Length: 77
Image 1 (cartoon, one colour):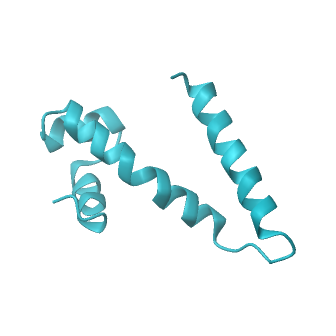
Image 2 (spheres, helix red, strand yellow):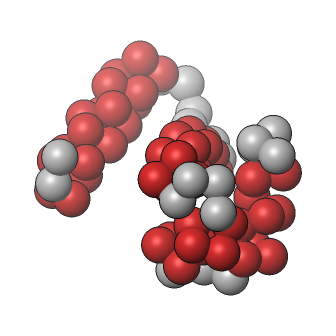
């Protein structure tokens, strides 16, 4: 799947989300989307890195301590 395809999926999902909301007020959309995609990203990258946090952090372009914090937040440690 290309980057563009992922963007299309997110856009379509958000459009459906707004359609489902109807007249209700949307809130915390940014946090909702980030938390929704962050866990599967971490799971896939950790699998690809064979559980090596340093390698996974490098793949993600984040600090290892940041990765560790995110893994803990998502119950992946």
